[in-house]
Length: 410
Image 1 (cartoon, rainbow, N blue to C red):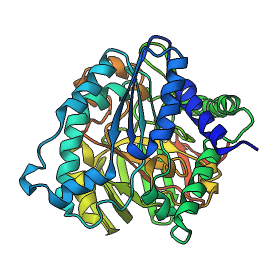
Image 2: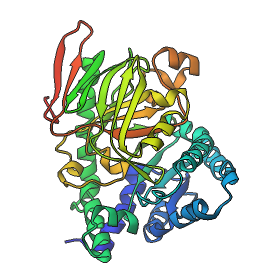
Image 3: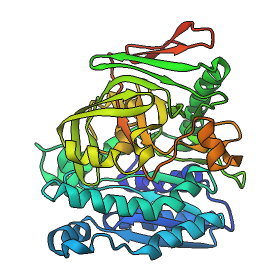
Image 4: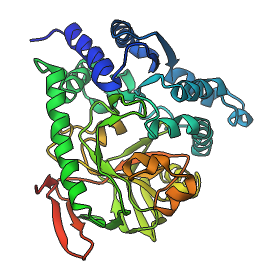
């Protein structure tokens, strides 16, 4: 049995070596909540042992975010600390590595004005756009991980004492991230090989569309010519191999921005901008959302979709078997990094250019003409379950099963 300290060290090593794929001589920027200090210290030490030239940390704090919404002047929310995003974009452009540790209280802003929340999120997205375009084009190596914070742990385990909430969430994270294995590095290499086999199969098929069927979902989405299925492991423009998300259970590609028809219903809540959006459905016509309903958080969801023209269209389709370790945990995580790896999902907004052949070389106009979507946002939401079937539609109209009852048919 590994001690907590050993598992935490394994997590740091895995993040640096497999996640970020840090190379000797690279700089690394870490963005992390203040609660992550103990893990960040291990990550920084691991990065320097791996040959990092410089590691810098940008700290975040939910309490500071909440204080702004509670006390700041209402007319100040279009202001933004631009130095943060300008620094991030500059580092990505020069090939420095990036690590984000995302962990927030899902209910942080539940009592705040949704109009103000939406405004703050839009301003944030506008300033983040240059950086996000860089990393979504694999301009450099980057990774996203998470760790327990008190508000998040309490949301998942509301009936347990606070100290047990945190320890239970840590153990779940160690398990689903394969940290508790005798050799986490080897376990991840085996897992990544399995994911690649799935992408190879679907790339060989090159379906023209996918059809989703489940309770509350009857939906068909077109796939552009020359689309590419990808998995968790990527290669940067500097030929550095890295893993975008830890954990990752998905394979994904880009849909055609103008070819989505029907209704999709959420299978899990979406935690966005500190507010939960629950039990929602989206109706699509000609690739665009034409109707939105939600039992909770509808105003925030509508504001999100109104962010810009591309926000009402899709930028990603992703397949995840119901048997994934995260799904089998039986937990609702209220954290997109985890919940998206428990279920088939879609993403509103910007598409990954790497999921289209030569997409990284295209102008914005060429990418749009090929079916690629652009937007300020890229927001994943979960639609898959043990009751979902997915079919691939071939160029001659034949229908072939990809998933039945949430599991691969191949």
